[in-house]
Length: 310
Ligand SMILES: CCCCCCCCCCCCCC(=O)CC(=O)SCCNC(=O)CCNC(=O)[C@H](O)C(C)(C)COP(=O)(O)OP(=O)(O)OC[C@H]1O[C@@H](n2cnc3c(N)ncnc32)[C@H](O)[C@@H]1OP(=O)(O)O
Ligand SMILES: NC(=O)C1=CN([C@@H]2O[C@H](COP(=O)(O)OP(=O)(O)OC[C@H]3O[C@@H](n4cnc5c(N)ncnc54)[C@H](O)[C@@H]3O)[C@@H](O)[C@H]2O)C=CC1
Image 1: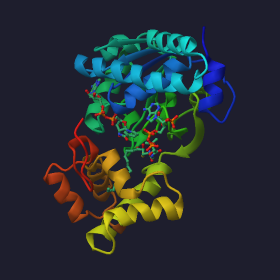
Image 2 (image 1 turned 90 degrees about the vertical axis):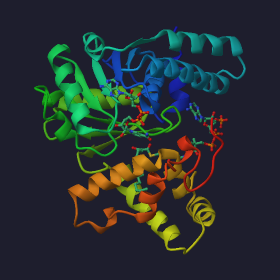
Image 3 (image 1 turned 60 degrees about the vertical axis):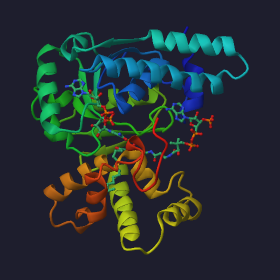
């Protein structure tokens, strides 16, 4: 029934890996949560996808169906009937709920992908800690917040870590597995095995700002914006330079638009507040201006570039 071997060969640098975790609850059905639910379901996991909004859940199911279709087209290009079966079976493994507490009761692993706000994450994890079975591992997909700080409200700090995926989740092969100060070995090993079982190449990092990728990406994107702001080169030329000169799939300003300029600003402001002496994290007037004008990148139709609104 499970086409896991085929999927793993196509989406991972490792061969099929088994994980003791079978029941995953993904909380937050937006951009990242829907992708995490998709890769979990296509690897054979039972997934409960939770969002406070049933509209978001309906949208997530639709986009997961579309994206599974893209996977099936590639993996089963010579066997469309198998491809359809793969899509239907993967979708069949995802159930949706609007109550996080209910969803946590049967979870081996909870992956949180809700808004990037410490208070909201604290409220959620406090609630889940009271209802999830004692063996359940909690993980956050946060981009920029501290795992230790998120974990500070739960009793199971030894069973808490970071699982940081990349956008678009079904395509990006990396998973950063973040060990908090109190994450125990069993939790860390379980997170690593689970990450591999959903087809990702896992790296390990400590709970430091931005982990590995965003700690490098944030200054890189910031410097690109400052270069453009000073008028040293056009947006197009900055992006062409990094694509053709450094081999990146997207230029830094395209990537800033893709991630969302509001998200970029939110991360930068948070780090500036926390590390005021670090000049790399100083505010960027052009970024502030674009966000205040509602120019948020791809999602709003304009950022450094203009886009067709979907
Ligand atoms: C600005 C101030 C300072 C702050 C800066 C802060 C920045 C960093 C903080 C970010 C915060 C949050 C982000 C985070 O935590 C971490 C991230 O996620 S960073 C972003 C990482 N992602 C990237 O870098 C993306 C780079 N781009 C690409 O890899 C490609 O451009 C992309 C795959 C997005 C699109 O490829 P392209 O060739 O342009 O388009 P196609 O549409 O043809 O797609 C190619 C290929 O992939 C398949 N595909 C695409 N999307 C999906 C999907 N969702 N599901 C399944 N498959 C998908 C598509 O079908 C194509 O397949 P083919 O077989 O090749 O046809
Ligand atoms: N957007 C990106 O490129 C990346 C984002 N992340 C991180 O992933 C997390 C989610 O980001 P996105 O998916 O982009 O956000 P999003 O805005 O697309 O989705 C967040 C979802 O969480 C839901 N939500 C909010 N509070 C909730 C609650 N208490 N219970 C259940 N659902 C709730 C919202 O309704 C929304 O649908 C954030 O922590 C972000 O930093 C990590 C990697 C990449």
